[in-house]
Image 1 (spheres, rainbow, N blue to C red):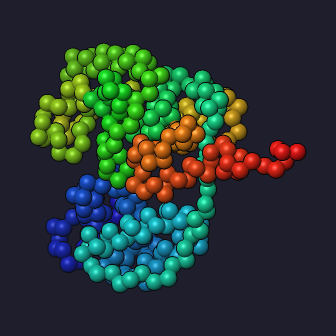
Image 2: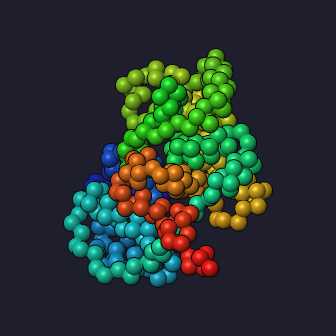
Amino acid sequence: MLSIPIPSAGPSAPKLLVQVRQAVRLRHYSPRTEESYVGWIRRYIRFHGMRHPRELGASEVTRFLTALAERGRLSASSQAQALSALLFLYRDVLRCELDPVGEIARAKQPVRLPVVLDREEVRLLLGRLVGLPRLAALLMYGSGLRLLEALQLRVKDLDFATGEIIVRRAKGGKDRVTMLPGAAIPVLKAHLEEVRRMHQHDLGAGGGAAPLPGAYERKSPGAAKQWGWQFVFPARRRYQDAARSGWRRHHLHESVVQRAVKEAVARAGLTKRITCHSLRHSFATHLLQDGYDIRTVQELLGHRDVATTMIYTHVLNRGGLGVRSPADRL
């Protein structure tokens, strides 16, 4: 970690990047946002020869962002993320008024259509998956979940009676409700029985706690060991929580599913550039093919703007957006 004290804050003030982390957590941003912001701020400081950001201004921010686009060949989304991190640094950490950022050499954002599998390709892919990766993939395709949304599910988020899944604190910090596919219910119930046995074993060994969001554990100390708060996809290994002096079990790491999907794609002989997120894209596209309203699909996906959902209308299997080729009339 960079050791850059703030000149005006006194000798006991936390280091700059510690202050960044504190400010991020105070605003309840995600851990990934925290790591991203800290990473960009660290790069910004190193780019300017380890000078303190208080000595820098809008022109230095512009130089850094332009260099990212021209020399670093960074994508437009990453460049925008870097700008957000620096604006956060000056506005919320240093409490400095930053002059308007000048003209930046913008990284070009290519317009790409999402990779979508047809139904037979989904069957082939699922057929090459086994165990937890297969169940996670089935939920991503059957419920439109992102990979981390699936892995972060708690037992209490599944409602078998109504056939619903509650997705907590999804992208943008919003909760949403989506369907629980009937095809997944028998496998999911059998899987949860195994998870329950593992949880009972952990409790008997003095563990059995799952990490809880925010400060909820202080408000409800016993909740971490309750069955409803356990992850649907628990990690295979426990970890020692030094702060709370106990063994805990986090959710399965996303790389386990990503690696399994990559290997399954190769075994199935599929040539598309398929990732876990392709299953979410396929969920949306197949719903639209089945005639469901785009607003319904928007709600199930959790998109803030229907324009985001509209991208799937361009990949529907309707031959040129529903236009029949004149060659087919010969």
